[in-house]
Amino acid sequence: MKRILLTLIAAVLCLGSAIGQQNPMRMTYYLGHIYLHSKINGHPAFLVFDTGSPYACMDSTFLANSGLQYKMIVYGQIGGAGNNQAKVRVIVDELTYTVDEKEYQSQISPILQLKPIVGDYADGILGIDNMGGKVIAIDYLGEQIGFWDQLGDTAGFTSIPIRYDNIRIYVPLAVTIREGKTIQGEALMDLGSGGSVSLTSDVAKQYSLNEISPLMYYTCLHGGIGGESSGCDFRASNVTMGPFALDRVTMDFSNNTDGALSRAEYFATIGNEIWERFDMKIDLAGERLYLRPNAKFEAPFESPVRGFSCTDRSKTLGYWVVNALHAQSNAEKAGLRKGDHITAVNGRSVKEISFEERRTLFDGLSGVTLTVQRGDTSQDIRFDFDEPKI
Image 1 (tube, rainbow, N blue to C red):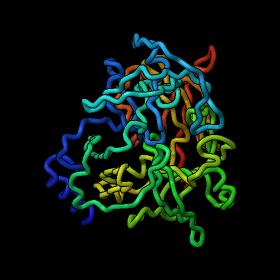
Image 2 (image 1 turned 180 degrees about the vertical axis):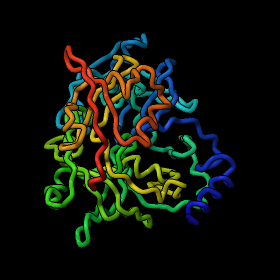
Image 3 (image 1 turned 90 degrees about the vertical axis):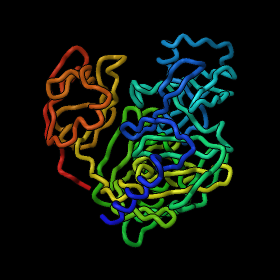
């Protein structure tokens, strides 16, 4: 508690911004993703900031509705989390992304089906291909972000060496699975992930992680750009990054046979469930990461209890899509299936549930009744949330 109070006092003394005085811009931190209030060729766009993506990308539905014009287009394939490569159209040398009153010219902009993965509020992705000389500063709790030319004041921050190579950010990480079993090496900083730490399937095989207990198996309809995905949730003893140790971290390992979480030059990805516990500055040119614990640093990592996750498509399709299920969860036993269309939650139409309310909709509930459309039939599926299993 004393540590949390000192962190809060330090934040107040920082003159209104936990990351400094270089005029940070507003961001929206929503359900594990960083959204930037941006423009694409002058058209307002809500972009997901993703250090796991080297490129700026556009959602196909946003592009179709925006009226944006383009001349040069090529075709290619793009990978990511998920088991497959996605075939995509790519706009070449025609788009300007405006963020924080700064303009970024994108040489290539893949067109993705992003909303089925992230939800209707995602109009695109801003990667880091144009930010090689920048400092990226993020205040998760204050919902502020900055893209700066100078590092500025780092008082109270701890410096950790990183590697910036081929438009990727690699961070030294150690994961203690159980006593006597520690995995360490370079992990990919993935600010496009809402999870904590995800270990690759190669590492899972190498360290026989399927043998640890307890595990919670899950499958995803859209695990990322590469489509379907599967893996296991478990609780690690601790995660260490520089001098910072986080205990009893709920995390996962992949069972994918292909894609970004199968075989890679890194052994894990680090998502926002870890980073949201810090004020952060990323000096890409200097290859240093500056971290300062915030008021959320000591918050416990919860065990998944709902048994499912869904993607909000209420704005464009009028329903939420069940994207992931835990095997043997109460949700699955009650009959919920991946791909089901949720039209109401506890009797309320999902069209009536606001963006803000969605953040905390299930907090404090012990169970839920979902109205589900599957094909031509509609049914109510009622279940209690699971007891913590990991």
